[in-house]
Image 1 (cartoon, rainbow, N blue to C red):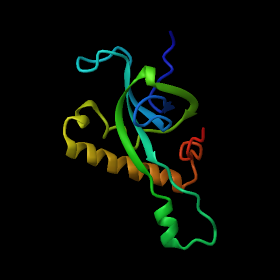
Image 2 (image 1 turned 180 degrees about the horizontal axis):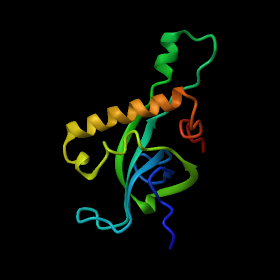
Image 3 (image 1 turned 120 degrees about the vertical axis):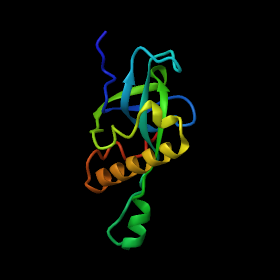
Image 4 (image 1 turned 180 degrees about the vertical axis):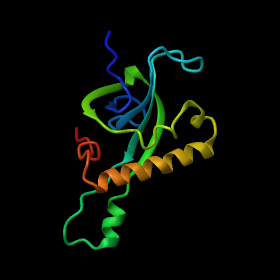
Length: 136
């Protein structure tokens, strides 16, 4: 079977705490690992999406409404719904690895880097679909 769950592919989580949230696959593990013996992926996603901004809002309000809250997680392939969209993950690919999940301080550092990358991407107006809330 062709491997289509590659790094950079955008997916939607369909189960668990982050159900309905959009994620981008950072590192796929098709065969699984010793700790997770099933096909899974290391993902970075948006826990809290940025809000709509209008022209007559002040810079302070705009700054507050354009914040993104990210999360990182190991997710089973069965709980991911892949989309046609892709996202460049080179800016934070080195930060997210299997070792990142062992230490809480490393997790927080990774989230900060991802938050910065996501906010820059949102400010530039790229990947608008990824930063919009999924309405269903």
